[in-house]
Length: 157
Image 1 (cartoon, rainbow, N blue to C red):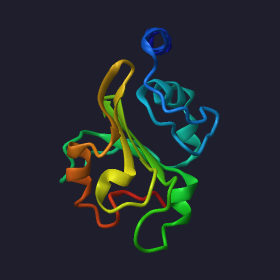
Image 2: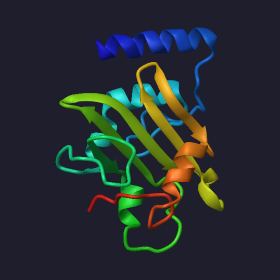
Image 3: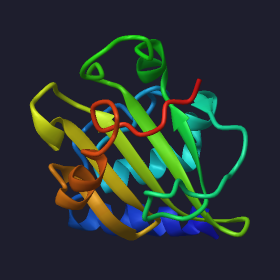
Image 4: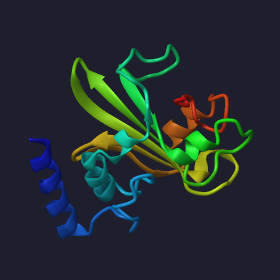
C-alpha cells in the first residue's frame, strides 16, 4: 500500500513540478532535500544501513513525539568525538511508531555551517502528508536548539 502511495505522490508531484532540490537519490549516506525525492529515498530504506538504534523505544521526556528509532549517517557518526558544529552532510532519520505501525519520519541534514538552525534541512512526514520540509523551520529549530550539541539530540554509538 505504501509503495502505491509513493508512486501516486511521485506522479502527482511530477505533474505539478516535484518538491525537489536535485540531490542524488542514489547517495545512501545523504538524504535528499525536498519531500518528493526524500519520500523515494526513505522508501528505499538506505538509512537502515547507518548507525541505528536496535529497536523502537519510548520518546525522551522532553520530546513531543512518541515511540521512535533513530539512525545517524557516517558523517555524523565519525564526528561524535569532535566539538562544536556538526559537519556539512551530518544527517539523522527518526522513525515514529504507533504500536508496530510506522506513522511518520523526521529527517535532519546539515547543509551549511551557519549560526542557528538555518543551516539544517528539516523534514517531517510520510507519503503525501508532509508537516515540515525545508530549512529554518521554526518548530524544528525551536525544539532542537535545546540539544546539547548543535541541534542533534541523539547520537547513536
